[in-house]
Length: 584
Image (cartoon, rainbow, N blue to C red; front, side, top):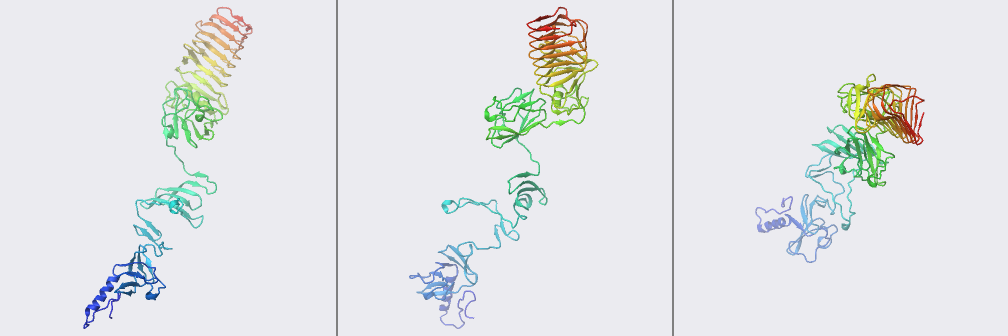
């Protein structure tokens, strides 16, 4: 063997003369091969004026002095070309291509791109800062990854899109988010062509939380969702226009309470598609007013009618930017429909935080109005509903302003001794209006400064179906106006005076007491025992009066009518009729 195997450098023979020639030849080969840097790789003929030491990789199809030397490294030395035939694994840097080349035994190949200045058509594995292996043929270990679009100015579209494709509709094309390689969330086309979002607590069992149909775009939530942006403004103590509490811009739940029946005519913070849940966390009714001009147009409610949110009820609203209105997705119209008779209890030691369904301090309501509000939210469904009030004095009046649904409840105190259950207030003790109806019995009524014992207006009706006691009242024991009605079908007692015992007035007010025994104690004083005025009536026939009173027996004016069928009403002076009034 006279040459080395890999580089073909000549050996120095043992008895060789001029050993320096052989040695220098070997050095020339080393100089040409080690750390190869070539001018180019695409020449098929020698350059016309090569410089000493220039190197080129001869391209296929070479001619002239390079004929038959394809892929050889051509070195210009001492005015002539030397050709070095590459071996497997030789590497060379091509200055013209700015590329590192490797000889694979057949051709020179770009180490980075695989040849030809572009990525190879197929690369079985690629690991970036990590080792790739099956099934993860592409593996990247990095704290961040960036995909940047090629700008239009650079010949691109300016877009960036990553596509994940699957073989068929039953397969999966998804992205999985993991904790220490244990999956916790997955989204994509999971075992169907619908877009799905799934989550897992253990990386094994996944729960589907969202599915979006690929044909319709309809989204299905297969699990519950939480509205967590909750604000609880201070209690409403007045009606609200353009209501704009702190935090409303980012809230999804609005907890409201009020000190009495309050209204909200508009709500700030509306933007397209926004959903807000309004929850009445208090004990008083809060009404959302429909299309009220009290608020600016963009804050108003378009509900088809006022919506009353009773205690512990809610309304779900969505903002429609096209209409510039809040509209109702859900409203508290659904009522509890009674399947059996029910009794609610009120006691002086109760609490309005109770449910009212048991006669104990821990079960009964504290105020009568609370019980009225709860019953107002029911569908009585023809069942008997009784509000049973325990002994004691109650300083809060009773107001019914909307009709009950499915029946008329009974407000009942002490049926045998009404004086044991006293409603003593400034204002009306029991007030019914707007077409509502209430039956009562077993109470003593007292009002101070102003107000009536029983008061009806606006077609409201009170049925007195049990014993009553009327104590001192600032205005009248019974008062009706504007088609309000009071119908008495039980005996009762008068123990205190008033301006009037019966006062019916203005556009159809009506009081009817027929066939009852009325007992007067302590000689109560009245301006007039019965007063009918301005096209109103009092019907008091077939009654028995026990005891006496002072003051005029009656006054009928301005087409007011009192019908007693000749009976003498209590009083110390005669009655009077004037201006179209009638007494019979």
